[in-house]
Figure 1 (tube, rainbow, N blue to C red):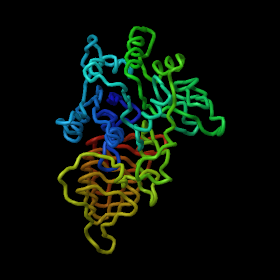
Figure 2 (figure 1 turned 60 degrees about the horizontal axis):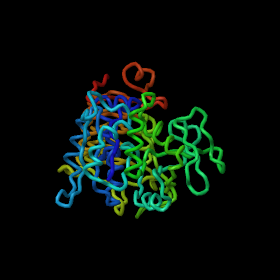
Figure 3 (figure 1 turned 135 degrees about the horizontal axis):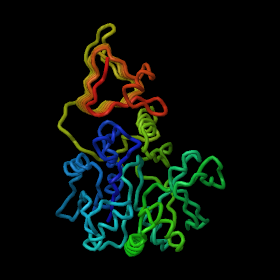
Figure 4 (figure 1 turned 135 degrees about the vertical axis):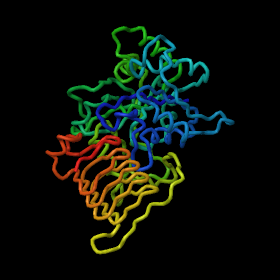
Length: 404
């Protein structure tokens, strides 16, 4: 079975997480962040999945209920499990505590192994390869790992492994991460995806729960303890492909934990030959299928031609005499005449008025851009009105008012 940890608050993605849990943040036009982890599991025929939720979970719960309906007659399910306070009147104190508070699920399902996956990364992987390595090594826990630039590694758990793949050291978010021996510019980090033997996981979270000094975190407490006990092995994510993947996509994994990383990962989708393609039908990313009409462009007049260049357009989009370049438009977005949208992410229902300009921006659901308004043109002015990321991306929250 699999347990997907989806209780993250996602503070660094504010205002996109102001009204929703991080795993419910829309991505790539039609998807939610959680769709990528769930699709990897389901494509691998791991079809008993619980999603542990907590923070502002209504949007996420609704998405799971309306989208992720597997076959109950075969015992397949994706079930949202909120914090139930089975161990006392308290919320989840950390990812390990989330599992500890839901040990009853493992008693009911009685699995031999348990996948514990994060819910907010962009990637394709086949967890079956991870399972095969786990059984071959006899590990108590197997940790999926990938290479990241050394300057980013302090945001992750950094792994040192020997030649056999056994983890000999695990440093959670170290200030000075050790580089890889063969490449001083890169570090080897945990992807936040784990495979446990059931008994090892149960013993580990019970021991952790009794430790009052623990932060009750899988990466910070559980994995280092199992490394110390000699029970942890690594699964090298980039060494295995999924069906239909192109060589340029090998090893693609993005943690979209900040506004800039979210924006950059979205822009990755737009290349002529993208490093992450949404068009792989051999290992598809599943999401909701809503009854919306196709996207369309209208008007073909001098200076008033509806056109989209190097962009992704979702169902129900209308480009009515405006110009869209290098942008991702979610369902029911409308761009009106003489408007310009460039290097932007527009979520569901955004309206861009006549003559408006939107550049290097993320606009959350149902934002209305008035006629003639300018976003991303004068960053000094935008900082006084909206959120502006470190890299100068203007972000406007759900239904927030846009000034002219």
